[in-house]
Image (cartoon, rainbow, N blue to C red):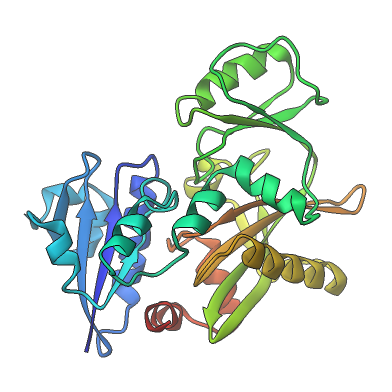
Length: 322
């Protein structure tokens, strides 16, 4: 029986979302095939074996039944496969992948280089632009200071270059708001992206590797807010439409672009690719990629694959057995 380690938590602004994803995976993993252990990383980067009821993951798991790990590397080496279901730092940016590679520990997800380039939205944009992937106009601010003007028409979206779960993202309609939201975005990263805001439908596609790269149906997010921010994603009742009510032509275009982006960014195992569809001007734009998408009860990634006929238990098994 294959020994599998599920790692969650971490020193990330998305710590709580990681715990929710871990709960879903732990509740659905095939226990007949895998000997499963869960390890949580605190916000202070301390590693603990988690042995409690999974419902505690919705609260404060550090107050549950846990045992501290003294020699982390030796402990990790005892497993056949590691599933680092951590969103944001320190997984999606390539840090933990580098550590696991260094000690030849097999893991699920994209490798170091793909994780680094995909986690930085500016680098992702540069690579995709080189391959003629359509994107919304943007600029990058690298210093935490006020700006007197921006070469984009209002309104604009301001967001950290390296952060997920729609954290630190705001819409600005004037220069005063730009400077306000730039300061907020700099709380999460040292680099900020300012994009032209367009009225668009938010469409997403999932990819999983199972002997070949399989692409899902296209889903649409009907955000309860102006855009799909953290509140709309995890707190309010935004709607997820699967499959999205779009034409077969647009569906095919999104699926083909998703596979192309997955390839050019050198991704592995799984990813969710997000798009913006300007329905007024009939233009499709690549928005961003998520190399370790959420597995919560409201996460689009497993729901998209489920619509394709792959249930959550099968998704987990495919990822482990790759």
